[in-house]
Image (tube, rainbow, N blue to C red; front, side):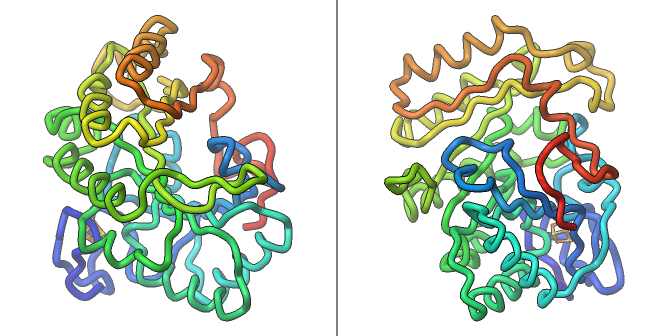
Length: 300
Ligand code: SF4
């Protein structure tokens, strides 16, 4: 934190004195803790996923649906001890995992909380719910702490990452990150009750006008292995978009979504999670509310 290189931006700033693009200082900061059902089926068995939404984010996606906490860094500071207690509470409430949403820029404090919770007997899989913009050193530091890697592969080229997320090298870094996790962990393993326990799932949100370059994303993943479990998402909602691209100001069409799912099937992927086309209205979080997702128990 005194020369921060936790994400591929490698700002090398002292986070106790200056804020980087991720928008939070050296202390843990949490926007919400929710028992959440809006994840892929193996992640929401039992009461649901114990989702901890961290404030701030190294990416600045112009269409982010979590803008209140990711861009504006809403939330409050929390100690590792307090976070460990919330993790234990999520386990007592029957959650199937601890789901760390955008944890990269706060990794040291989160791992401290996980170690404390493990000392109290926490026995749930830990999900690293990542934008995909990760360094290999950063991922190495999660080995032994995280079990499930739920990783976005947002774009199939660097140029789109520059335009929509304000980083120059998204495609390069995210491909390296996914290759690394795939090599170390393999596909998501599911227990007899249907609960995800360990391994990789890759998410891709299809953007209107195919702006995300989905075919390049799918072809890269298929070359790596069609055994990678894929989640192809339709929940893009233009109400969150702050930018000037006309195609991003409209919803995704059914035809655009279907052609991507068909391409994934043609490429031989064995596990493809899909979403309904009404998903944009289902997943409209408001983190100022008691129930940010319309349902699900908020405990922070
Ligand atoms: S985590 Fe934040 S401060 Fe650290 S390198 Fe990334 S953007 Fe910069």
